Length: 287
Ligand SMILES: [Zn+2]
Picture (cartoon, helix red, strand yellow):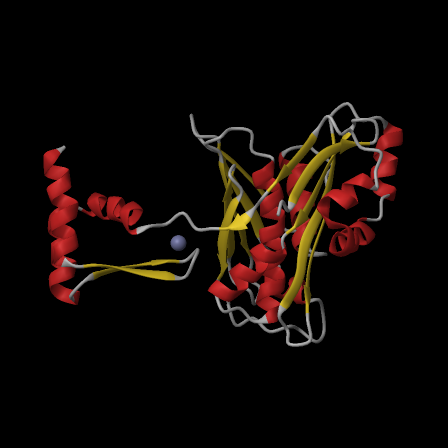
Protein backbone atom coordinates (compact mmCIF):
# COMPACT_ATOMS: atom_id res chain seq x y z
CA UNK A 1 0.00 0.00 0.00
CA UNK A 2 1.24 3.49 -0.78
CA UNK A 3 2.36 5.33 2.33
CA UNK A 4 3.64 8.68 1.04
CA UNK A 5 1.29 11.29 -0.39
CA UNK A 6 2.36 14.66 -1.78
CA UNK A 7 0.06 17.35 -3.10
CA UNK A 8 -0.48 21.12 -3.13
CA UNK A 9 -2.87 22.82 -0.74
CA UNK A 10 -4.00 26.38 0.08
CA UNK A 11 -4.60 27.42 -3.53
CA UNK A 12 -1.53 25.59 -4.77
CA UNK A 13 0.76 27.74 -2.62
CA UNK A 14 1.91 25.11 -0.13
CA UNK A 15 3.23 21.59 -0.60
CA UNK A 16 1.75 19.04 1.78
CA UNK A 17 3.39 15.68 2.44
CA UNK A 18 1.74 12.98 4.55
CA UNK A 19 3.74 9.88 5.49
CA UNK A 20 2.74 6.67 7.21
CA UNK A 21 6.14 5.41 8.29
CA UNK A 22 4.87 2.59 10.53
CA UNK A 23 6.35 -0.30 8.54
CA UNK A 24 9.62 1.58 7.96
CA UNK A 25 10.14 2.27 11.65
CA UNK A 26 9.06 -1.25 12.67
CA UNK A 27 11.63 -2.73 10.30
CA UNK A 28 14.39 -0.37 11.47
CA UNK A 29 13.64 -1.09 15.14
CA UNK A 30 13.66 -4.84 14.50
CA UNK A 31 16.86 -4.89 12.41
CA UNK A 32 18.79 -2.93 15.02
CA UNK A 33 17.06 -4.48 18.02
CA UNK A 34 16.24 -1.04 19.43
CA UNK A 35 14.80 -0.07 22.78
CA UNK A 36 11.55 1.96 22.61
CA UNK A 37 13.43 5.20 23.34
CA UNK A 38 15.91 4.50 20.54
CA UNK A 39 13.06 3.50 18.20
CA UNK A 40 11.32 6.77 19.03
CA UNK A 41 14.18 9.12 18.17
CA UNK A 42 15.51 7.05 15.25
CA UNK A 43 11.95 6.49 13.96
CA UNK A 44 11.26 10.22 13.81
CA UNK A 45 14.48 10.71 11.81
CA UNK A 46 13.44 7.88 9.45
CA UNK A 47 10.05 9.55 8.86
CA UNK A 48 11.56 12.97 8.15
CA UNK A 49 14.14 11.38 5.85
CA UNK A 50 11.29 9.73 3.95
CA UNK A 51 9.99 13.24 3.33
CA UNK A 52 13.38 14.52 2.17
CA UNK A 53 13.76 11.52 -0.14
CA UNK A 54 10.32 12.15 -1.63
CA UNK A 55 11.50 15.68 -2.49
CA UNK A 56 14.40 14.40 -4.62
CA UNK A 57 13.89 15.29 -8.26
CA UNK A 58 16.50 13.19 -10.04
CA UNK A 59 16.12 9.43 -10.48
CA UNK A 60 19.69 8.94 -9.31
CA UNK A 61 19.19 11.23 -6.30
CA UNK A 62 20.37 10.23 -2.82
CA UNK A 63 20.18 12.10 0.45
CA UNK A 64 21.81 11.44 3.82
CA UNK A 65 21.60 13.02 7.21
CA UNK A 66 23.76 12.89 10.28
CA UNK A 67 22.45 14.15 13.61
CA UNK A 68 25.25 14.39 16.09
CA UNK A 69 25.47 15.95 19.52
CA UNK A 70 26.73 15.08 22.98
CA UNK A 71 23.46 13.37 23.91
CA UNK A 72 22.83 9.83 25.09
CA UNK A 73 21.65 8.65 21.65
CA UNK A 74 25.02 9.08 19.96
CA UNK A 75 25.04 9.65 16.23
CA UNK A 76 21.90 9.12 14.17
CA UNK A 77 22.46 8.59 10.45
CA UNK A 78 19.75 8.02 7.85
CA UNK A 79 19.90 7.82 4.05
CA UNK A 80 17.26 7.59 1.39
CA UNK A 81 16.93 7.69 -2.36
CA UNK A 82 14.43 8.72 -5.02
CA UNK A 83 13.00 5.19 -5.02
CA UNK A 84 12.09 5.83 -1.36
CA UNK A 85 14.34 3.16 0.06
CA UNK A 86 15.20 4.42 3.53
CA UNK A 87 17.90 3.05 5.84
CA UNK A 88 19.94 4.18 8.81
CA UNK A 89 21.24 3.58 12.30
CA UNK A 90 21.37 5.07 15.77
CA UNK A 91 24.63 4.64 17.66
CA UNK A 92 23.10 3.88 21.05
CA UNK A 93 20.64 1.04 20.36
CA UNK A 94 20.09 0.63 24.12
CA UNK A 95 18.94 4.20 24.69
CA UNK A 96 16.62 4.55 27.67
CA UNK A 97 14.01 7.23 28.18
CA UNK A 98 14.77 10.10 30.50
CA UNK A 99 12.49 10.78 33.48
CA UNK A 100 13.34 14.44 33.88
CA UNK A 101 13.01 15.73 30.36
CA UNK A 102 11.99 14.71 26.92
CA UNK A 103 13.72 11.61 25.62
CA UNK A 104 14.56 13.41 22.41
CA UNK A 105 16.37 16.25 24.16
CA UNK A 106 18.53 13.84 26.14
CA UNK A 107 19.25 11.72 23.10
CA UNK A 108 20.31 14.67 20.95
CA UNK A 109 22.10 16.55 23.72
CA UNK A 110 23.53 20.05 23.44
CA UNK A 111 25.88 21.46 20.85
CA UNK A 112 24.44 19.11 18.28
CA UNK A 113 24.55 19.57 14.55
CA UNK A 114 22.48 18.32 11.67
CA UNK A 115 24.31 17.73 8.41
CA UNK A 116 22.55 16.94 5.14
CA UNK A 117 24.31 15.65 2.04
CA UNK A 118 22.22 15.63 -1.12
CA UNK A 119 23.61 14.02 -4.23
CA UNK A 120 21.63 14.46 -7.41
CA UNK A 121 23.84 11.99 -9.24
CA UNK A 122 26.03 14.47 -11.05
CA UNK A 123 28.43 17.23 -10.18
CA UNK A 124 29.32 17.72 -6.57
CA UNK A 125 26.89 16.86 -3.79
CA UNK A 126 25.17 19.67 -1.93
CA UNK A 127 26.13 19.83 1.74
CA UNK A 128 24.10 21.83 4.25
CA UNK A 129 24.30 21.99 8.01
CA UNK A 130 22.79 23.73 11.01
CA UNK A 131 23.18 23.69 14.75
CA UNK A 132 20.44 21.72 16.50
CA UNK A 133 18.38 24.28 18.46
CA UNK A 134 18.60 24.02 22.24
CA UNK A 135 14.86 23.33 22.45
CA UNK A 136 12.61 20.73 20.93
CA UNK A 137 13.83 17.63 19.17
CA UNK A 138 14.14 16.03 15.76
CA UNK A 139 11.36 18.04 14.09
CA UNK A 140 12.72 21.36 15.33
CA UNK A 141 16.21 20.42 14.11
CA UNK A 142 14.88 19.87 10.60
CA UNK A 143 12.75 23.02 10.67
CA UNK A 144 15.90 24.92 11.61
CA UNK A 145 17.78 23.25 8.78
CA UNK A 146 15.18 24.32 6.21
CA UNK A 147 15.10 27.84 7.63
CA UNK A 148 18.87 28.35 7.71
CA UNK A 149 20.15 26.28 4.86
CA UNK A 150 17.37 26.37 2.29
CA UNK A 151 15.49 29.53 3.39
CA UNK A 152 12.20 27.63 3.36
CA UNK A 153 9.86 28.14 6.33
CA UNK A 154 8.87 24.49 6.73
CA UNK A 155 6.63 22.97 9.39
CA UNK A 156 7.39 19.37 10.30
CA UNK A 157 5.63 17.05 12.75
CA UNK A 158 6.71 13.45 13.12
CA UNK A 159 5.78 10.85 15.71
CA UNK A 160 6.22 7.26 16.82
CA UNK A 161 3.70 5.46 19.04
CA UNK A 162 4.01 2.25 21.01
CA UNK A 163 1.64 -0.52 22.04
CA UNK A 164 1.22 -2.32 25.35
CA UNK A 165 4.33 -4.42 24.81
CA UNK A 166 6.40 -1.44 23.76
CA UNK A 167 6.19 -2.44 20.11
CA UNK A 168 5.91 0.26 17.43
CA UNK A 169 2.24 0.56 16.45
CA UNK A 170 2.37 3.78 14.47
CA UNK A 171 4.91 6.17 12.98
CA UNK A 172 4.42 9.01 10.55
CA UNK A 173 5.04 12.60 9.58
CA UNK A 174 3.16 15.58 8.20
CA UNK A 175 5.06 18.38 6.46
CA UNK A 176 3.85 21.74 5.15
CA UNK A 177 6.23 23.74 3.01
CA UNK A 178 5.10 27.05 1.49
CA UNK A 179 6.30 27.69 -2.06
CA UNK A 180 8.37 30.86 -2.56
CA UNK A 181 5.37 32.85 -3.89
CA UNK A 182 3.04 31.97 -0.98
CA UNK A 183 1.10 35.00 0.32
CA UNK A 184 1.22 36.23 3.91
CA UNK A 185 -2.36 35.01 4.40
CA UNK A 186 -1.30 31.56 3.30
CA UNK A 187 1.69 31.60 5.65
CA UNK A 188 -0.70 32.43 8.49
CA UNK A 189 -2.83 29.43 7.55
CA UNK A 190 0.24 27.21 7.52
CA UNK A 191 1.08 28.29 11.06
CA UNK A 192 -2.51 27.84 12.23
CA UNK A 193 -2.74 24.27 10.96
CA UNK A 194 -2.81 21.69 13.73
CA UNK A 195 -0.17 19.22 12.62
CA UNK A 196 -0.58 17.02 15.72
CA UNK A 197 -4.19 16.41 14.80
CA UNK A 198 -3.32 15.59 11.19
CA UNK A 199 -0.59 13.20 12.28
CA UNK A 200 -3.03 11.40 14.52
CA UNK A 201 -5.63 11.19 11.72
CA UNK A 202 -3.24 9.15 9.54
CA UNK A 203 -4.08 6.13 11.72
CA UNK A 204 -7.77 6.22 10.82
CA UNK A 205 -7.89 8.02 7.46
CA UNK A 206 -4.62 6.92 5.85
CA UNK A 207 -2.29 9.34 4.05
CA UNK A 208 -4.70 10.08 1.20
CA UNK A 209 -7.59 10.66 3.60
CA UNK A 210 -5.55 13.23 5.53
CA UNK A 211 -4.67 15.08 2.31
CA UNK A 212 -8.36 15.09 1.34
CA UNK A 213 -9.12 17.05 4.52
CA UNK A 214 -7.62 19.99 2.62
CA UNK A 215 -8.92 21.70 -0.45
CA UNK A 216 -6.12 20.10 -2.42
CA UNK A 217 -5.16 20.07 -6.06
CA UNK A 218 -5.82 16.58 -7.41
CA UNK A 219 -3.83 17.44 -10.54
CA UNK A 220 -0.78 17.30 -8.31
CA UNK A 221 -1.33 14.04 -6.50
CA UNK A 222 1.81 12.02 -6.00
CA UNK A 223 1.14 8.73 -4.19
CA UNK A 224 4.11 6.45 -3.59
CA UNK A 225 5.48 3.60 -1.51
CA UNK A 226 8.46 3.99 0.83
CA UNK A 227 10.16 1.11 2.62
CA UNK A 228 13.12 0.32 4.84
CA UNK A 229 15.67 -1.13 2.47
CA UNK A 230 19.44 -1.21 2.57
CA UNK A 231 21.29 -1.11 -0.71
CA UNK A 232 24.26 -3.15 0.46
CA UNK A 233 25.11 -6.52 -1.08
CA UNK A 234 28.11 -8.79 -1.21
CA UNK A 235 28.70 -7.66 -4.78
CA UNK A 236 28.57 -3.98 -3.80
CA UNK A 237 30.98 -4.49 -0.91
CA UNK A 238 33.39 -6.50 -3.04
CA UNK A 239 33.88 -3.33 -5.06
CA UNK A 240 34.87 -1.57 -1.83
CA UNK A 241 37.42 -4.33 -1.19
CA UNK A 242 38.92 -3.85 -4.64
CA UNK A 243 39.93 -0.37 -3.55
CA UNK A 244 41.92 -1.91 -0.68
CA UNK A 245 44.16 -3.65 -3.19
CA UNK A 246 44.77 -7.37 -3.60
CA UNK A 247 47.83 -7.62 -1.34
CA UNK A 248 46.16 -5.85 1.58
CA UNK A 249 42.99 -7.93 1.27
CA UNK A 250 44.91 -11.23 1.11
CA UNK A 251 46.93 -10.16 4.14
CA UNK A 252 43.75 -9.56 6.16
CA UNK A 253 42.32 -12.93 5.10
CA UNK A 254 45.58 -14.67 6.00
CA UNK A 255 45.64 -13.10 9.47
CA UNK A 256 41.95 -13.28 10.40
CA UNK A 257 40.71 -16.19 8.32
CA UNK A 258 38.38 -13.85 6.45
CA UNK A 259 37.79 -10.15 5.79
CA UNK A 260 34.67 -9.05 7.61
CA UNK A 261 32.56 -6.01 6.80
CA UNK A 262 29.64 -4.90 8.90
CA UNK A 263 26.86 -2.84 7.31
CA UNK A 264 25.66 -0.36 9.95
CA UNK A 265 22.51 0.43 8.02
CA UNK A 266 20.99 -3.04 8.11
CA UNK A 267 23.10 -4.67 10.82
CA UNK A 268 24.39 -7.38 8.47
CA UNK A 269 27.82 -9.02 8.55
CA UNK A 270 29.58 -9.96 5.33
CA UNK A 271 32.51 -12.33 5.19
CA UNK A 272 35.05 -12.57 2.38
CA UNK A 273 37.29 -15.63 2.20
CA UNK A 274 40.31 -16.44 0.05
CA UNK A 275 37.93 -17.93 -2.50
CA UNK A 276 36.03 -14.65 -2.66
CA UNK A 277 39.29 -12.77 -3.13
CA UNK A 278 40.12 -15.06 -6.07
CA UNK A 279 36.82 -14.16 -7.68
CA UNK A 280 37.11 -10.43 -6.96
CA UNK A 281 40.59 -10.14 -8.48
CA UNK A 282 40.10 -12.67 -11.27
CA UNK A 283 37.32 -10.43 -12.46
CA UNK A 284 39.54 -7.40 -12.13
CA UNK A 285 42.37 -8.96 -14.18
CA UNK A 286 39.98 -9.56 -17.06
CA UNK A 287 39.05 -5.87 -17.22
ZN1 LIG B 1 23.20 -2.96 4.58
